[in-house]
Amino acid sequence: MGGRPMKMESGPDLPAERQFSDVMCTGCGCLCDDLKLRIHAGKLDVSGVPCALGQGTFATGQEDIERVRQAPDARVAGQPVAVAEVLKLAAKRLNRARSPLIVGPTESSMEAQRAAVALADLIRAGIDTGTASNRWLARQRAGWVGATWGEIKQRADLIVFWDVDPGPEGPHPRFAERFLDPPGRFVPHGREGRTVFHIACWSDRESAIVIPPTGALAVLSGLRTLVRGGQVEAGAIEKATGQPIQVWTALVEKLKSAQYGVLVVGPMFDRHASLAECEGLERLIAELNVFGQGRFIGCSIGQGGNKAGLEAVLGWQAGAPGAVDFRAGFPRYLPREAEAGRRLAAGQVDVVVTIGPEKNVPFDIDHPDRPFWISIGHDATYHDATAPAPDLALATAHPWIEAGGTVMRGDGVTLPLTPLLEPTRPTDAQILDQLRRLILEQGASVP
Image 1 (cartoon, helix red, strand yellow):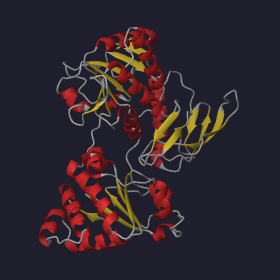
Image 2: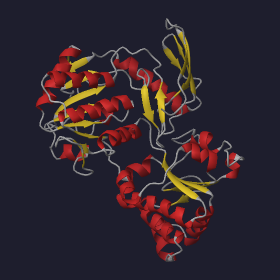
Image 3: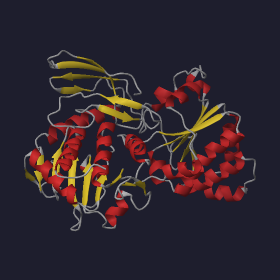
């Protein structure tokens, strides 16, 4: 496993005050794993967390835990029922399901994600992240030149951020502090030895190259042409991108002369870019490695949670990063028709299992024709009395404050979770394993 081993200083009897070091935060895509926290009288002291986003993430997580602990451990149609009984009902329903679907778990540990894939395999279900992205399709078509973020720190002399603010006031507050500012092995002067560009659809940075939201494909196409030494019509590219051609020719000169260049995209690009834009990005990076003087890589900061982990687990166990269907008795990658949103909208699902926070549910819970809904998550049994409740709900430990395990950063580095508080409920991995065993006991055949 990647990352430093977790360190916890505490006595065997769990004293009222404990100190933790090398704690990881899932608040943003940086997944910082060097934090210090203290537990005092059962409360998290976040004063040792160096950014406001991280402090808010841990504080909100503890508030969520205190709130949902008032709810029962399991419910049937909104009514409290014993956990064992709800597990049996869920197993029975999934055993007879004709077209089940598992959505998530993008905010759980990789151990829970492996259990979810194993369950999907057993019941011949579809499984998806619930958040479609064209990035992986583009990489299959155009290839992928990537590296870990440690490479950025140690080697990068040129970085282009695309719709990413890596500064302390942005959505990734410590990315610059950890990977741009410090000196590296081949960049001994740190930030002073690096050239940084920003391309953005919106930005208040004076140095940013601002383009319209519809201009990304034109920028990528124009840059690729210029990198190959071709000619670009000045009026056309200025009209499409809002920037004169001199801006792009100057950028290409910098890109081609870099010894180690990096193009970094953020969650907005991952979520909203078209397949053509994602493919254009990967091909630009590949062509810079052919026509440039040094090496060039691409990376994604991503977002909080563990979507990268689920994509990796699906890749290891099912051969694809999402939209996998086991109905034929073996995994099939159906990157359009097996996406969770499409299947649910088309009414092709009779039982849906959602794993994780209810806010991530990819369907209308108020719709009268929604599928039978099994909800597994730390807030699964806590809901507004006026809102429709899941048909079956099982509450779990909070996935990154009470539960341990492993998560994956956007560059493929695995990092350990630190269980800070004693859980009062089983983890989602344990619930999924129990559910799988019950299904087997009820007569399902092992694939």
